Image (cartoon, rainbow, N blue to C red; front, side, top):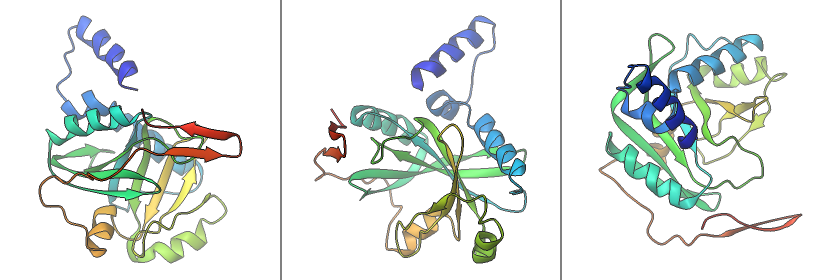
Length: 213
């Protein structure tokens, strides 16, 4: 993903269009990604215009790349919360300057996810988080025919989601991911890193798959 974006950046620079968005320089065109996910939802009968956004998620395939991207994003963040979930650390970073997408919506957090715990995920910008709020249960019932499933990440983080054709997702939350983490005792006070985690191997029906290097 970073390599592909470097090619785009080089092409724009050659045309005299120097890029000035440091977050886009790291994760790619997040505005286009958010617009693409919104349009795909509209085609499925879901309009997210009334709802605030929780976060954008960015996936990387290598543990070393996770560390590299985390360091880059932390230059533009004020705090994070990092914990182990599904066998590997995941970091939610609070941006110093929230991103603006979909004309007037803001995204204040980026979820950075290292090597996958399942076989098929889109690397790079991978999901958009939407906060449905108190309408969560009614929303889930109304749109059940187009929802793919539900994740049970904690007592307060239980998003329903849609898996899209390119293996990206949109996830719908009762409250933002940050609020859900804080409700479980998570803190956003400076930068915290998991220090006692040892890279693991994923074992599936087809055999062991060494994920991090």
